[in-house]
Image 1 (tube, rainbow, N blue to C red):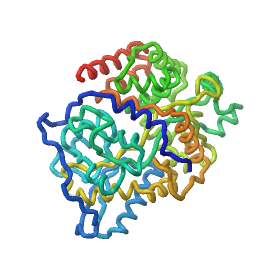
Image 2: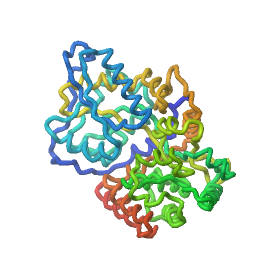
Image 3: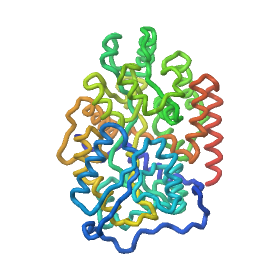
Length: 452
C-alpha cells in the first residue's frame, strides 16, 4: 500500500480553512449552549460496566459492511461488557433521518456525520455533537493523521467555519471519484481505457453505436449528477479554480467554463450516453446494474470498489478521469469517508470515544485493506491483493503526488444538493439549459455568501 498521508486533499483543506459562512441550526435556536465533552476522560472501557453503544452508520455495501462488522466484532471481543447496537442505513437515508434522531431525547451514541455546511456544521451549531479535542489529547488522533485530514472534520463552535475550530469526527477510509470500466465490453468494442477526454467521447459514441449503454448512471437522489458534474468541472476548469469556488474565495458558478461542464453533461444525456430514465434509478442500484452488464463505464467513488470487485472479479477496472491532454496530471473530487462522531446526549461518551479510536486505529487500516477498502492512512502490514484494489490504490498515490484532489461540490452551501442537484435532474431530463442550471447554482451560492 502506498503512503496515503500526503494526499491532494490536504491542500484543499488549507483553502477550506479560509472559508467563512453561516449555517442555520436544525431545529434549534441561536442561543443553544455549546456541547462540551466531559472534563475527565476515562479510557478504561472494561470498568464502564455493561454498556449498549448505539451506532448509526452508512456502511451497507459489500466490503464496507464487512469492514465495520469485523471491527465491531473485534471491539466487542476485546470488551465483552459492551454490546454494539448497530443501525445501518444507506447514505441518502442516513442524511434524511440523522437530523431528527439527533434532535430527540434518545439519540445514538456514535454517528457518521457528513462533512460540510449541510450536515456537520449545522449539527455543531445546534449543539448536537461533542467536540473531540479532549479525547484527542488522550488518543492522539492529530498526531496520527495529517493536519489537512483533521481540518476536514473540524468546525468552529458557531458552525460558521469548516476547516478549523474543534475536532468533531475521525474517518476510517479514503475516497475518490473515478472511472470504472467493464474490461470485457471494452475488448469486444475494440477500445482501450481512454487517455484523454476526447478519447473518452469517442469511446462513448462507439459504445452507443454498438447498442451498449455508454455510462451507467442513476440519479434519483440528485447527488450523483453533482458528482458527475464535478468530475467534468475538474476537467474544464482546473483544480485551483474549483477549490476557490467551493470554499467561497473566488469565481462564480456562472463562469463560462462551469457552464461548459454543464453543457457537456447535457450533451451526454441528449446523445443517449446515460442509463435510460436515469433520474428514477437509485444511486446504490447503479453499481449493481453495472455489474450485471448495464454500462461500459461508470463514474463512482472508491466506496463501490469492494462490491464491484466481488461481483465482477477481473472484468472491472478503475482509473482516474482522463485529463484534457494525454500525460497531463489528472484531478478529481475526493476526500475521506464520513467521520465517526459522538452525539452530545450520549450516555457513554468515554466508551464511544474508545470505540472511535479502535475503528480508526492502525490495526483498523489493515482491516480496511483485508476487506477490499481504501484506508485513509497507510496500513501497517497489509497490501491489496485484488487487481481492482491495486488500481484504486495506485490512483490514490497519483493524486497524492500531483495534488489532484478537489472538494465535493455539495460542501459549497447547506442547501446545494437541492438547489443545484434539482436543476441538474432537469438538465439530465432535457428540461433545463446549462445556463439555467448554473444560474440556479449561483443564486443559492450568492445568497449563502451574503450571510458571511
